[in-house]
Image 1 (cartoon, rainbow, N blue to C red):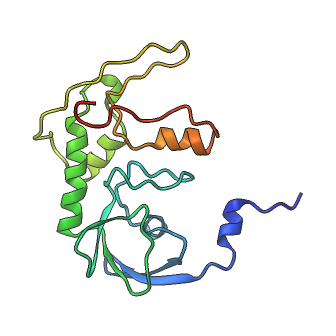
Image 2 (cartoon, one colour; image 1 turned 30 degrees about the horizontal axis):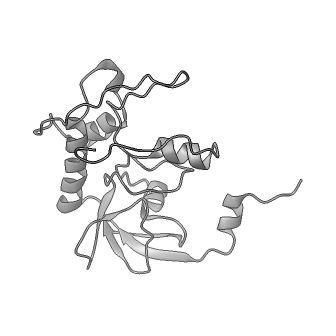
Length: 184
């Protein structure tokens, strides 16, 4: 069968865009995010909620980059470059924001065997983030009420990767987020 996949269809006749990334001139497809182009260029930008093949959410904010002329930092996983844009992922401001996100997430993760050696730890080590200065939030009790699934949110960073994978790959919406705010 000669069927075309969704990814192949997305690559047909896509214009390219040239911009500056960490002082280097780079070119990518207009439908690629800054993070995707950085990966192709060998430029490492932290990411936690981003997962190849899933729709970008941009909710963890660990992939923040500085864009010349813009007041606020932008999540590189869901931001598309424009021609002539100047993007910096390794500026003091961008790295400070990336490190702060990781430090805050580390402060909420208990130091137990099942929460160690994860992506948060790996990125924190790469960015030389030390022991968190912040106190952890109150822990949410584990939920063993369902016969087929137990829920332990000790290591949950609310990246929504599990929610998006369940919805977009498994085509069932049986996982969701709740109790996300203070006092809920």
